[in-house]
Amino acid sequence: MKKTFLSALLALAAFTAGAQTQKETLQVAFTGDIMMGTTFPSVQLPPQEGRQLFVDAAPILQEADVAAGNLEGTLCDGGQTHKKVSKVCYAFRTPTSYAPLLQQAGYDFLSMANNHANDFGADGIASTRRCLDRLGIAHAGIQGYEPAVVVERDGVRYGFCAFGHNGYTVRHQDLGQVRQIVTSLVNQCDIVIVSFHGGAEGSSRARLPYGKETFCGEDRGSLREFAHFCIDAGADVVYGHGPHVARAVELYKEHFIAYSLGNFCTPYGMSLGGVLGYAPLLTLELTPDGRFVSGQIHSFLQAKGVGPRLDAAHRAAREIRRLTALDVPGTPLVIDDEGRIRRK
Image (tube, rainbow, N blue to C red; front, side, top):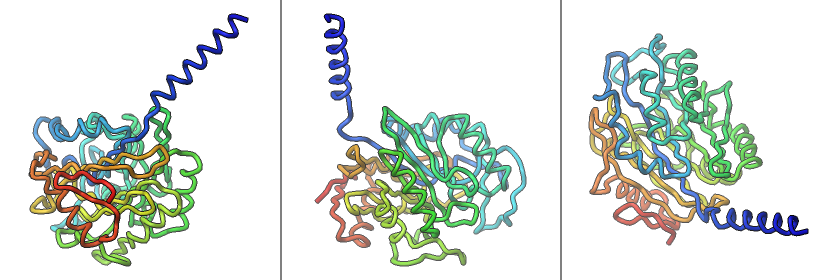
């Protein structure tokens, strides 16, 4: 009898302790494009084998419960590209020895659904996947492979999926497939996060249009429609990249949308002048069922060969605030001078 009573007390104590340690909010972190350096068509790699690339960003990424970004390019050490490389067409080949930098920075998930994942064909995709798998970094977004993944942290199941506009990616234009993937994650996860690569590119494309965007003759998606569609299907956060510049953010039905987080760690191979060098790192506080509580746009700047460095002038945050006021004026969000985000 005493043993049974003692066992009940211990069980109650364990349950109470678990309830007390359960987080009231979850913190998730997001960045845009990552291309740490390339060996094609010439060697353009950062000093010290890239060990300083994420030095300013890592403490923020590591503090989050989960952190996600977009891996723009391949992790491979050889092979041939099918692209005709020119001043407007690039192919990126980052050495596999740089892959551990992503783990050390704190990334849990990386999208491969972008227009550089196939720069070195099936062999490049396979090499990239092997690198990420060895490091325990989840990934998704390539047709024929897993369309979505689940990452569990502290008992919380985070579902990630990634969509792009190229034929070898899981395409965001195929809304039937999008619904199927998102719904599958909703049925098995606590938090569902959607990544997308889309939109026209360049410093003149920071504004968020209505309807379909095209660039270089390609359909780059109808991104307002897509983001709202994902939330309506049960997603909790939708974040984008692709234009190489930041775009507006929105609170839609209690859930957060970032339409583009631009470049983040692209020390070579991409223009970094003006707004192209603004590198936001977004952190969000969510309720356990995925609703927005608060956020922070951490502003970074990039310079050639350096990687993202904290910007005391908060230029990325102020740019996102400006664009949000222009393009989603009715959204119930306030962004202050230092990038803190709250509801109105």
